[in-house]
Image (tube, rainbow, N blue to C red):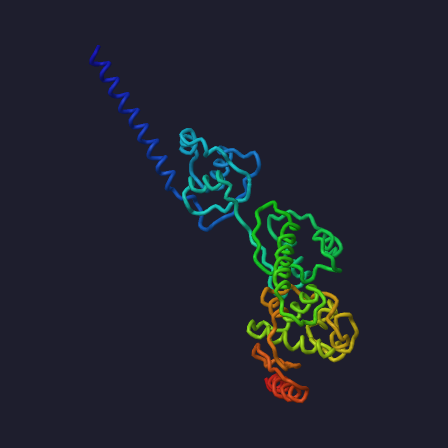
Length: 340
């Protein structure tokens, strides 16, 4: 009888040990077993989702084979049951690592880029196509944005700072614009306070307008201060700026990619071949470098420049030199185009 009891106890101990070892093995496996993913995948955890519901969904989606070991581990590590709502990027890390990211609310961050030289309409077009963004702004209602951003000018053009902005699912489109507008105000205010003296601007806003023109005139960073010097020299002399990007902006949807002599003669408030001043608003979103060039320009005797066809420009001190440069670079470009 005693012998039988000892055998039962022995067998029970062995079986219990096997079960414990089996569970321990699977828990350890859970810590290292990768989720079944070929590449990172976005996954939305809805409000009210628990650990069991989450794991069952993953099992249904083929991301994991079983949930029981996770349930057992959750008894030992209760924090695993603290599932936070949000959009997460699941990776091929272990199932446990992915769960812990959800526990810690390490939601996926999406990016929104405002590129130097973009117009407000181009920014809005990208904004409307962002994934997981909460839309609270109406489409193409300039007055709404002016009021919402508390802009004291007629439109938003020029008032958004080019940069990459990160957001999480559920953030509003307006919150991105507010952050970008705040960055532009701070940048402009900082540079305006330390600006070079003697510039032909009556306000920081006029400097922003100039910066937007510089931004559109050249993509060559090293030329921006020199481009600025040309425009500033012309303003001091009460000369027309005669810059094509302002004409194109004023034409809006009428511009088809081909700027003609008729366009240069057509009056708009932005046609700097017709007006002897800056246009009424910026024409694009200027970069930090363009704003700095507008407020800290080079000193030169240049009043003209022409594109050389390689991204750079030829600068001239007088009209005669400029006409020679036009013949050299622009007419040569036309000849090459005709020959090809």
